[in-house]
Length: 129
Image 1: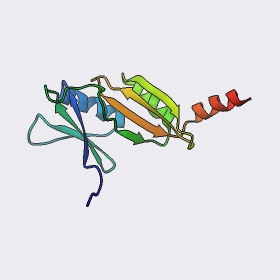
Image 2: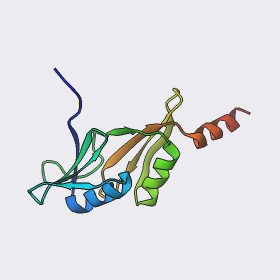
Image 3: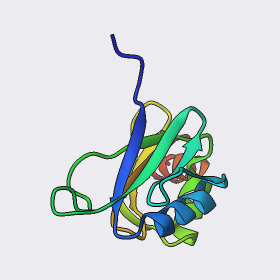
Image 4: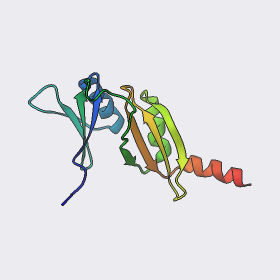
């Protein structure tokens, strides 16, 4: 019946500018359709779309967050912050060997990351001593 999430869509004030930021963050190319108002990036099999924010769906932090599974939590978080994202929540220890956090992108939307963190594991082991 269900085969997976088709796409993640961010509602933003400037879809092209948002697509450019995410293109830099994920280090991938932007896909532009025949309609020049729509842009997306493809990360693995997942499409991330950018749509003009409006009265029905403004940009912001009110609800759903897509969490990306990452191989190096520390590097991804540092990259996001270097490109202008702001740590919003976490990092939190999931107690399963990985950590999670949310960052706010420059357009006011949240991105979540889940993955192993050498830095966090080291800090937590120092607390145990």
